[in-house]
Image 1: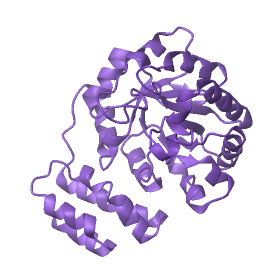
Image 2: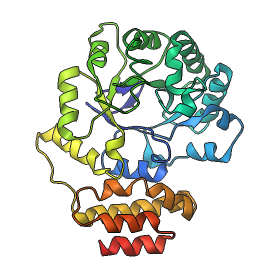
Image 3: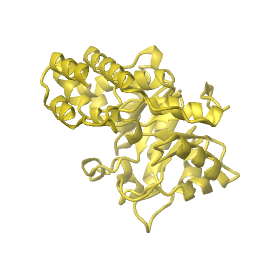
Image 4: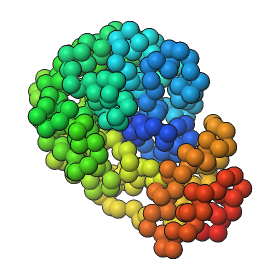
Length: 320
């Protein structure tokens, strides 16, 4: 049984990665229904939480049926990160996760996200301060390092464990790679081989199928895998992976009817949490996943991207 403190996640948990403008409450709930063992909020800026910015505070709202859930924060200032963790902790999530992995330029240039991988000592110092500022488990999501010449993740993981984090998720790319090339899990495997490492180590990067999830468990010994881009518009992947790991059998892909019904449900759930325009914009990131591989879908997908109201979207979906 994989545990983060007293939070039981199963024998080999499948996690939903935090993704900006994707993993809002509506999508998290659907992924939980399809078998995600642990979900995270969109990453939220420490400064935004401290200033009580509506967009930031909205991101950390969640429902009881989403548990276990982690609120993920990012920033580059020790005091701000600690204060943000305290604000997030008042929501009573199961976990506070620190984002030291986001490669987006506007975040990195401020020294946040994977930008902090250039300053590992400061990264450890801020993380330790956050751990001490809250009473709930603190975890970290990060990358192998800044670039090919700087991959401190094996040592860094041990240092982070020693200052009190209770799990770590590692994306098998450097910041310089962004999302290009193939994720390298070799160093993630080396972390698991380290006899001093006792906390759960989750792997992330290119887990886009049931077979890939099993391969990463068998080859690198990770305690679980985190799925990001492969889940966008495809919450079914959690059901498929869970079934395959338990039975060794591949489930058939979801029918077109099921995809349409889940897509409709997703949209309606989005509207419950956001205004109609925001919900429609957010769903545009999901349509390609929901209808990937369906023949003659191109025109319908273009119309979905252009639709300006819910009624039009529902009509288009009913015609697919």
